[in-house]
Length: 510
Image (cartoon, rainbow, N blue to C red; front, side, top):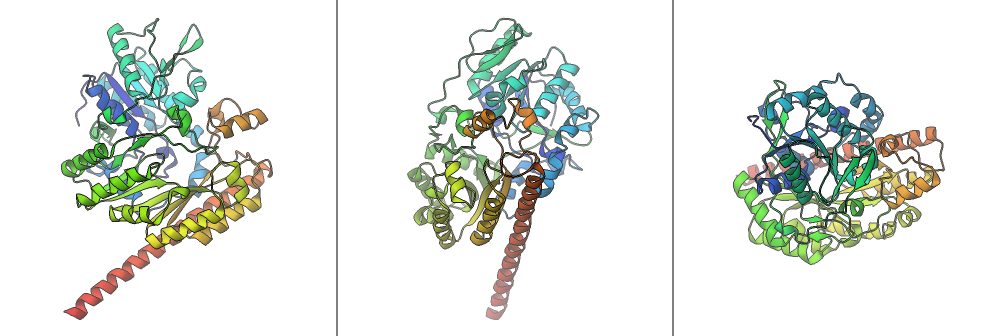
């Protein structure tokens, strides 16, 4: 991939790369939408994904995100126990300015010479995002720095605390970043007076100015499909190596459910989900299948099954097209029924993912999940009858949670026997009801960067000492990793026996 000048360079900060937990980086699908939106308006942009582990050769990194789709639809596993232990050193690693990761910024800036650098930041990647902004200003002081992504909405005070970030884009970013870029490029320098651009936050005379929010797109079918070919990484020779993402699809924006710990409605600015039409999704999938021979997909919707009939219609279209594909999606326990799972499986759904969160009814009520443990048991029986893989998400460390209640979660996992399980640490994301509750109690600070959301020493339970919680949380994470390893071994043994049986039958017939 050649360098080539761009108007704006988007950067996805390193995170998993520092913890060495995941060889396949997250796909910044939101940036893909923005790149396509800008391209329609003759603004040149590329995406530098810094969360890729450097491959040994160019070819090894060439389609790393295409492999990521296969990763999600296979029985792979994370080592979350090791991840949690390494996460405690995340800030230390980020602040090491001699880390070779940071040298890549100067290399890329020299190659593409952007007038603007836009950095995508989540709550977890804020330290990396701020470091990138600082590096950009150090290398090229006149380059305008913009931060978008979820953290620009939920953590804008933290992101503007220093002097390295010129603007934040909060809320839905496509139109906002277009108007901001257009204005900045016309001025050719940092403007002292901005027009009334909705959806931006900046500092003026040391004070934070937050413009009016950008109205949401009412029909997201009007947005162009996300760009699939502008993303790159650097290989060990310092060459820009293309990363092609063909398996990631966002069929809707938003979730209607009131989970106490979830920040989806804060980020999107509404609890009303907006859904693409079935026809629009089918056309995108058709393009990916015909153009790139894509066969594995991940639907990144906050909740894929918000509208049951729409899912049924989508599956019918996939079946009618006779596509030999497989895909993964996120469901909710109370959206599950046998007819829906059957048609999803026929349409290629290989795995559903469910946020169960706890094995205790009191805690399920506290976090507003809207179902009970017995309801989960009933739905799991439906999943078993449908014979479909399922991944279950659980969280430990909720406020008021006891050691025994965490054990209940572990026992429920052992009882339900999901295909995979992901256990994580309670994280009070800004803007959520959980965050405001803990803030009022003085359990967290307003500086969300120091809250360090994945740190196992962050104890919000109020029922255990920090030392006790660290021990119990690590045990739960280890339990999850061990469970996944054994589940994977059973899955591989089952496939081996099936293959052996089929081979034996074939020889017997012959």
